[in-house]
Image 1 (tube, rainbow, N blue to C red):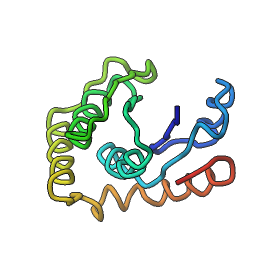
Image 2: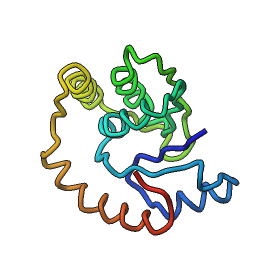
Image 3: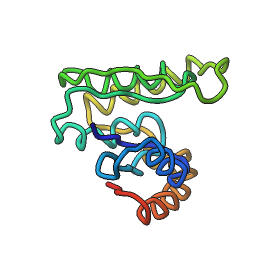
Image 4: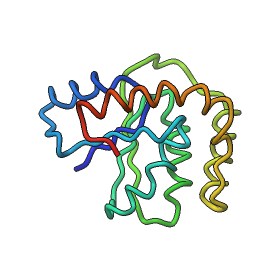
Length: 147
């Protein structure tokens, strides 16, 4: 199986975790085109579809899982890709995302799915996060495969 890491974070720590778990470098790849949870799915969609993926395991913490799965279900609607939620036990297990954020993410995913329009792609959240994401991408390229 291929592990596609699409997230902000510490690429060095992630690579260490993968290597410590015995995952060969040929089985993982990093993607730094996403800047939020919606784009974790929309930015990797074509890559995943071109590989002929039939099953996609969505791995995130309990806090993000309901929103991540709602977005994934919209993005992969009518594709035949089976989605499986795999909750991580990391982070604050009592934290809950707001309904407003979940609903706005669902609307953004649906606009992308049905109209090809990604709301916020040049907005303040994107501009705030992209500098750090690009720095992480540069660090990751030195230690792991990156798409």
